[in-house]
Image 1: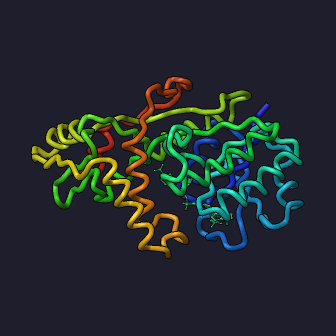
Image 2: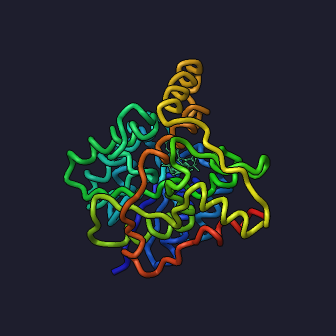
Length: 298
Ligand SMILES: NC(=O)c1ccc[n+]([C@@H]2O[C@H](COP(=O)([O-])OP(=O)(O)OC[C@H]3O[C@@H](n4cnc5c(N)ncnc54)[C@H](OP(=O)(O)O)[C@@H]3O)[C@@H](O)[C@H]2O)c1
């Protein structure tokens, strides 16, 4: 029998890709949208064969009705505590009420279980929701994909194409960072959602690459030398982020405040995936570092 998968956050970047990957795999795909959801994005979902269901997240009954018949609920919601903790709790409660067996929370990040609470605000929110979901009977599976590879395009210190620099912290020029493309993350999530049983956690990465390896790859593609530079020791980095956060209270209301971006980089340099579950599903053609870099580095 065909699997029915309900996707929350389906109008988002990752959520829409998860929907297409599910459709490709023959699932019946339902997407939760809100009154304020973008109509164009909703139309794209409908055209792709997704059944769009308008819900009010403050109305548990409408959410429960939407969840009835779903084999799995996938959350690709993005936001702060009101979304990652409060809205996901409401969605989970509705899924439980409707008898849904499986739930994939909107984690899609570095493995926060091995990081120190308080170091990364957005991971703390995921940890808070984890505590809630783990007290329920639903089968939860979190997908840890490291960073979306897209960040390599945005001239962060990790790779700055404008300044031709590649930075690292501590003595970690050879420390491998986990990057997964959004396409690969979506494909893997679709596989997990359609599986009857899956473990509590999956660790994936399209590629793992260090500052020195990145420099080699860039040289191969462009023939140019990028300056690989140490920015500071890790404890100095942590102190600088704390200071930046304290000086920018308005950032508490922003999903990707500057200090939050720095916290992500700090996390990437604090933990790495030692074992990858990439091979768990055979139908994913993982993007290599060279393939990905070639798509935007000229
Ligand atoms: N590892 C990484 O490097 C990385 C990078 C980026 C994102 N992520 C993660 O990937 C996941 C998806 O992120 P994304 O970038 O695809 O997000 P996005 O494009 O911003 O989409 C967010 C989705 O959440 C929905 N949403 C927002 N606020 C809501 C609310 N209050 N109630 C209900 N729905 C709400 C939006 O619905 P509407 O269309 O109705 O507004 C939209 O569908 C998140 O967990 C995010 O943290 C990871």
